Amino acid sequence: MTRWSDNLPERLLMGPGPSPVPAAVRLAMARPMLGHLDPAFLAIMDGVVENLRWVFGTHNRLALPLSGTGSAGMEAAVANWVEPGQHILVVAAGLFGQRLADAAARQGGAVDVLEVPWGTALDPGQLEDRLAHTQVPYHVVALVMAETSTGVLQPMEGLSDMVHRHGALFLVDAVTAIGGMPVDVDRRELDVVYAGTQKCLAVPPGLAPFTASERALDVLRRRQTPVPSWYLDLSMLERYWGGERFYHHTAPVSMIYALAEGLSLVRSEGLEARFARHRQASEALAAGLEALGLSLVVDPSVRLYSLTTVYIPDGVEDAAVRGRLLNDFHVEIGGGLGPFKGRVWRIGTMGEGARLEPIARVLSGLESVLQRQGGVGAAVAAWHPA
Ligand SMILES: *Cc1c(COP(=O)(O)O)cnc(C)c1O
Image 1 (cartoon, rainbow, N blue to C red):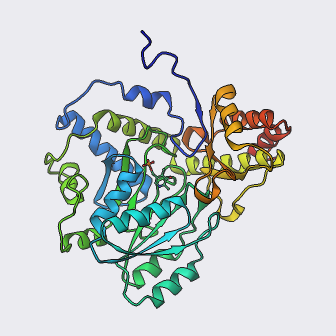
Image 2: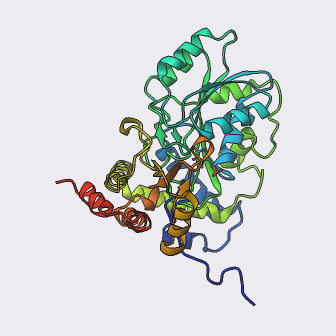
Image 3: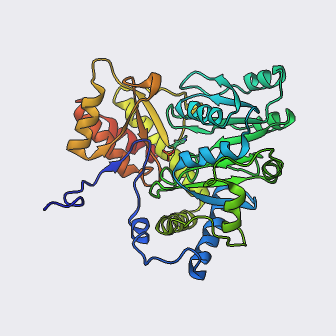
């Protein structure tokens, strides 16, 4: 009888996530099970919380990994901080911004959407304009820092000042940023921030790192209605992750091991070195793609280090190319979403993917499938600038 694990292919994951998981993290998940209230496990939790604060760049009391993927973090953010009837402004510059607007509306929020063309960043003047001219002040302004559907890294300078001046909380999706570029929660004065493990942290999907400022916790305490999600109610979750160790739900123990190991790898590399490596990877990939004669979607000034969008050349069939990359080269890249469907590929350089060797594998695969030359050489040259 064949079993599920027979002939499991080993892929190089260079799409929008999950990203490649290092062996040390995979092995961590095979360590013996502990009870979720065992003192030995509680000590591991404390280490995870401390390291999460460090990658988030925060001293917030509330920092923890939620059980669930990045979207659970999104759900928790809106379930706790959007009350029925409240005015919420969501900046939608791609699919994840749209999802955030949808999630906020499902909590009963009166959601306004500030649409930003796909492939570009929000112009702060536009936000200021919207905040200054709204009839009813917004409770929350939400945006995606690293938009994985478009490959844009939103410049954050000045935004939180603007949001706070207009009396709103600033809610930020950092799923594709965490571990690959600064999130800087305290310095940028972000109030509610969620992330995911399977992008630049190089940990399997399954947890959503989460943090909230004291300002956000004050707002939470003053809610008029109970948080509609029992599972994602942060005031209850905090009683387990904080000192009290109050039983809420069973922690996904093996996933916490994986995150503990992933964060300890980030510690040993150092944040600055890791951010520099992600930036270097993005530049090397861009050089390689351009040498193949391909055009990148996003202007270099706002290009996301962890995900590159590239136009599919005329006459080239999207699914056929991705299929050959997967089957012949065991390389996964992503297709486009929404208006980018069939028009762009999304190539991730996240975590372990942000190295020269995996980038060279993507480029040599593309070079071969598209019958072009010169991409790998250009990437090597860009990786080692003269
Ligand atoms: C991947 C991603 C999510 C969703 O995370 P899941 O782990 O797929 O639930 C949310 N926001 C952004 C920007 C993402 O890239």
